[in-house]
Image (cartoon, rainbow, N blue to C red):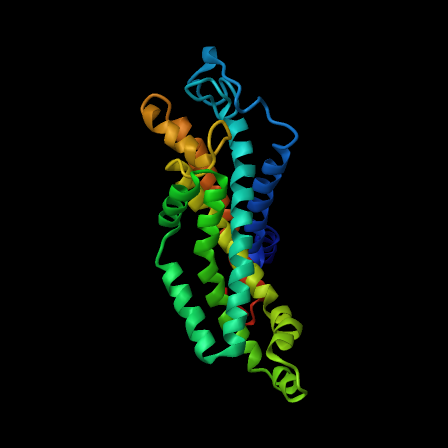
Length: 283
């Protein structure tokens, strides 16, 4: 009995299963994305009409589309495109959101009220609505997707950073710094931001997964990357016409989006379970 128990434990991920599984999935997605910069099984935009609508393994690992292009090569390049747009957008949301959120926690009063009402207004507009408005001004493309997703994430990071910063401000070392004559800006940069960096990083990891999903939606609507740059969302859009004839055209990008989002969500949740004191002891 004890031998079987020890064997079960040896194959168990332990209390941080989500962290390990999320790390593995995310590493695979990022690895394929980086690899696409140097190598793909076939040029992703190369048309081979003689090989059009071939099922998986008959012509390429994931089959081909209506123009004979290799779907797996498009998935690899699409991973890089989706990740680069998602990371750029999250950086915009993180930089502006953390700056405004920590300012709200530091100043309180009217400043905090104005910042939080601004966050409520921005949060009321989904990323797709923002993308449509931005596209009307500057046209569709990667920049439109980055700005729309980044704008939508600003209030997310405002709320998260404000809540984390308020807890830090309640600590004795912040009160001692105030008594020593330090200003709110100096306390924020010296004490608050270093203490909330971990929580912000965890939230950013989760938001990257959501940003990948939103980018796929924008690409599906034609508001993100323009052809011939491969995009998971546009691959799904192109597959609509051939769902009955070539279902693998939709399955491949759909599974890719699901796996990428799952990986980043599990990684973020796992990091929270491991490093957030409020979740210690939970299983």
